[in-house]
Every structure is written in C-alpha cells, then in structure tokens.
Amino acid sequence: MTGLAFDVRWRRGDFALDIEASASPGVWGILGHSGAGKSTLLHLLAGLATPDSGRIALDGRILFDCKARRNLPAHRRAVALVFQRARLFPHMSVRANLDYAGKHAQRGRQIVSFDEVVEELEIAGLLSRRPRSLSGGEAQRTALARSLLAHPRALLLDEPLSALDPRLKRRALNLLRKIAGRSGLPILYVTHEIGEFLQIGEMMLIIESGRLEAHGRYLDLMMQQRALRSMQSLGLVSLLRCRAVEHRREQGITRWQVVLGEAGTTPPVVNAPLVADPLGTERSLALRPQDIALSAQHVCGISVQNQWPGTIRRLVPHEGQVFVEIDVGLPMIVEVTSRTITSMGLEPGSTIWCLFKSNALRYL
Amino acid sequence: MIWDAPNAAEWEALKLSIQVALGAVAVTALPGIYLGWLLARRRFFGKGVVDLLVHLPLVLPPVVVGYMLLLLLGRSGPISPILDAMGLDIAFTRRGAVMASAVMGFPLLVRAVRVSMESSDEGLEEAAALLGAGPLRRWWSITLPLAAPGIITGLMLAFARSLGEFGATIILAGNIQGETRTLPLAIFSTAQTPGAEGAALRLAVLSLVLSFASLATSEWLARRARRWNEP
Image 1 (cartoon, rainbow over the protein chains, first blue to last red):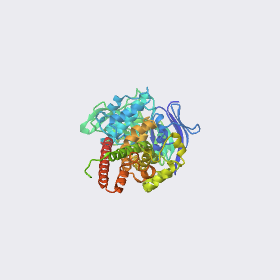
Image 2 (cartoon, rainbow over the protein chains, first blue to last red):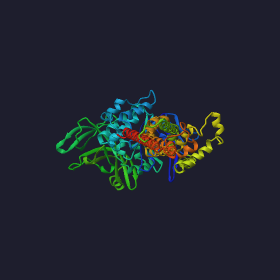
Image 3 (cartoon, helix red, strand yellow):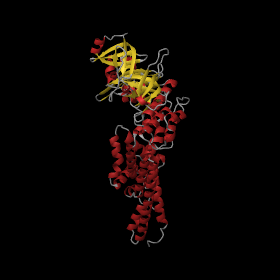
Image 4 (tube, each protein chain N blue to C red):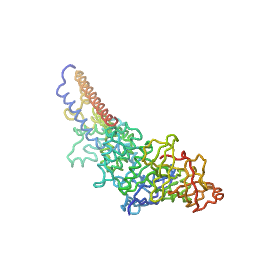
C-alpha cells in the first residue's frame, strides 16, 4: 500500500491521542485548534516520540509496530518534518545547511533538484549567510528547502510558512503542490487556516482533542454534520481558482475568470478588489459562506458586483443555520438561516442566484 | 640567587608538570565529554549517584582523594591483581601523578561540558535526525561543534587544575625527583630546604608563567570556537 497509514495511541497526563487514519500520496491538511494534538501526531509519525501502542506504515514499510516491537529511529524513517521554528544549524552557512540534507539523503531518490528549490524558494541570495542573520521568513524557507533536499518519502509540515509574506507563501505552496503531484509522496500540512491550505490540496484530516473528527475531501467534509462544527471556527470558505482577465482601474476592481476543472461549462467571471497582478496571473480567492446572499432571480439596481446562477445540491442544517451547497460551475457553500430555507422554498434541484460583493472576496 | 637561570632539576620539574597535565587531559578528555553529555541529555538509573561521585574530588580535601586512590590502586588495593596482570604500576610512579591530576580535574571538565550541552538546543539534533543523520554523525556534526567552547574551557580547566595539583599527587605518587616531582612539589621541597629561597621563587615564577600561558591559550581557543559558532 502506498502512502502513510497509521493507528497510534499516546497519553501524557490529561492529554490522550488516539488516531487511526491513512494518507495516500498527495497533499493532506491536518486541521484542528491549538492543543488538538496536530504537532504531537507529526512527532509520533516522524519518530521523535514513541506511541504507547499502535502501528505506522509508509509505502508498506513498517516504521512502528508495537506488537512486533519494531520502532525505526527517526533517521531511518525517511520522513521529513519541518517545524514552525526553523531549527537551522547555527554553525553552518545556509548552503552547508542544505548540503547537510543531501549528504544523508537516500541514494538514488530525488524529489526535487537543488537548483529548483533554490529558485522557487528564492534562496540564492542567502546561500553564503549564517542562519543567525536571517529573518523569520528567510529561515523558514531555508528549513523547508533543507527538508525537501533530504528527498523524504513523506513530508510533514508543522505550520512551516507562518512567517512568509503572501507572495513567497504562494510560491512555496505551489512548489509543494508540484512536488506532491510528480513524486507521489504524502505531504501532511498542519495549519489552522482552511483558506491557506485549500491552495494546495483538498484532502484533510480534522483533529479535535486528540481524536480524528473526520477525514476526506474538503467539500464532502463540509457537508458532514460532525466535521462542520470544527471546521466552522477554522475559517470555512469556498475557494475560487481564478485567472486575471481585466483591470478596471476607475472602478477599483480586477475581473477574474474562474478556472474550472471540466470543460464545456462557461466559467463565471468574478469582480474582486483591484490588485497589481499582471493579466493572466492565477490566484486563489476565498469566499466565506456568510458573505453570500441568495436571490430567486437576477437583481438589477443593486451595489452587489457579483451575481451567479446555480443549482442547489445539498442542504445541511447546523445549529439553527443551514449550509447550502450550490453548483455554479464549481461548488459554493452558502450559510443562511433555516427561516430563509422555508420562506424561499429552497430544496435540492432548485435554481438560485448567489450574490456577493467584490469586497467579500479575499485573496489568498 | 633568584636571577640565576633555572637549573636542570628545575627545568625538569617544569617539563614534568606539562607532561603530567597533558597526560591527565588526554586520559580524561573522552570520558569527560561523554559523561558531560550523558548528564546533560540522558536520563538513566543512578544518575544522581554518578553525578555525586564525579563531583566528589571538588569538595573533598585533595589529600583525602589521594589517600583513597592509594588504597584503591596501591600494592595491596583491590585492583592490584588486575594492575599486576597488565604490568601497570600506578602508586609512586609518573602514571600515579597523571592519575591523581586526572581525578582532580575530571569534575571541572565534566561540569563545563555539561553546562554547555545543556544550553545548546536539542531541537537541532532532532532536525539532523529527521534529515537522515545517524547518532554518531549527529554527535560529530552537531553536538560536538556546538558544545566546542564549553569543551575547550573544560579541557583547559582540567589542564590548569593539574598544573596546581599537590595534595593528591604527593600521597599517591610521592615526591620523586624526575619521576613525580612536578612544579608544586618542587616548590614545596625547595621551600623546606634552608637557603633555597631563590630556587623556590624561580620555580614560582615558572609556575606563574605556565599558568598564564595556558589561560591565555584557552581564552583564545574558546573565543575562536564561539566566533565560529555564532558569527
């Protein structure tokens, strides 16, 4: 079996972790509030902590098996873990830090080249510097580069990009997505920001108080009662992958065409606040469920810039509110009160317009 | 008089002091660094007792340490059959002088190494492991270089302690000219000899110069190591 499969139990004092899940090759988000056990889980998988019982396997190779008394030490697992704090070796230059990873990497395995990492993470200018002289973001980029150059079989990321500015963060996320796509390794990405994660993946594990609440595709999870509760406070959003098509400076907006997976449908165009990105640039925009209004028909004479027709797919009630999944060519999540559902007579299959202001869109 | 050049016996005492001190440092370096690391980084059964034993020479009168070593390593001591079998004579030999110095300097070395290892970040060793570096490799490439200033300080303290060693040496190794009579013992002998005040003073000056030189060297080395670690 390829990917990372685990079933681990670990208890210290009041905190107990008990999680069974598997992550196929690709990018997985690990979401949960602080103290939920996300970092602990990564430590157990990487071999920095030992589960009290359970089993961990990576691509069919047993990393830990309590019953068989097998416990591979961290340096033989080929599992890289990048921390929020960069942990660069202070007595070595940035280049020596990167070379250190290459020296101990498994022979014959390469998930990325030195040049590509240096280029994509913009490290070229830092190579001769010492870690102490780096800013937080520079150090994080170096740490990520170092872990990639170890050419691991699984990559665990514990909020590794928290200090990066948005542009560099996008570049780093793109690189991760690319590597996951071509190298077939599982990447587990811890974050408490759904919007940030959705830029590189849609599969996620949601963890609360040391337990797995739910796991699967983001859109499916969003329609599960159980997952909703945790996800709501983690920044539930609809994600629009868009390409810039026009700047209307006088109106203060940039028009973006949504990039759709399947061909045939006319992709909707969205008006968002003006940005300086050149035309043709691809960006991800996020839209919160509570920022979308519903209307039975197109509305004229209204300040709302974006009006999209769609079809209702599902209704999911949650604490007096209802989450509605609407297919507008791509799935959108809208939050309304249950009164709205009855008064507008909404049900799966009905046609509806989604209205949202350009200011409601957030660039990721 | 005092302005005369040191005579052969005095030069010999100086040479012997340096030899014994170097020998003591050479013998204790590896176990001292390892034990400092153990005490800083590992939890094991009996750690408290080990810690206490290592530090004992620091608080006991040196004469007592020397006496205990003599009981242990002397001709009728419990280890003497083993030493005989190996053809090793410790008591009243140069080896005894080295042994006495080594035991007295050991706690200083262990302490300095331990403090420096405790203050360096364990997370860096974890990071190295996650990049695929095995335990030995991590020790050489991360642990040792980062603790280098502390290790150098510790080795130097042990060396300096050995230069000043008197009590334990005179009990375990005696005061044999050309064999175990280091500078402090030579000073003791001359100071007791009527009319040899000049010689005692000359030896004291030699001792002063030697101590000063070793201190300056250690400071220079430690500073270099620090600069190398923290640019």
